[in-house]
Image (tube, rainbow, N blue to C red; front, side, top):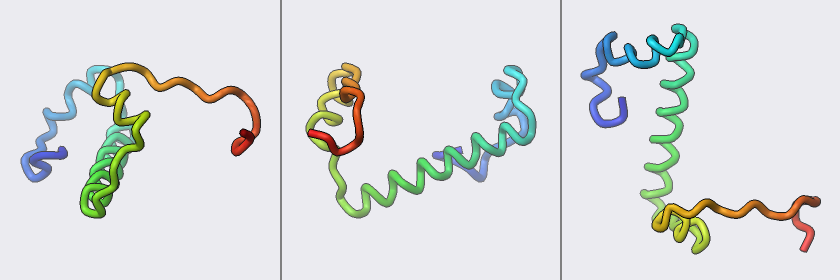
Amino acid sequence: MSATPTRMAPEDWGPLRGLGFSDQDCLEVGHIVGIFNYLTRMADGFGLQLDPEVGHASESGEALSRPPDGPVGDA
């Protein structure tokens, strides 16, 4: 769907259908793919970069650590 959307065929949805996805579920997957593609293209177009912690996690495969519980913005 991302690389060649005009070549999508009903059988491309087979793996999701095999997991029990309905038409509505497949539509939601399509929306998520489309939004992700849109946002990454915008970020690339504006030259946005990952912050260092996220960049390291992306390159190393290490999970990001969760911030401690508490109100957002407390430091």
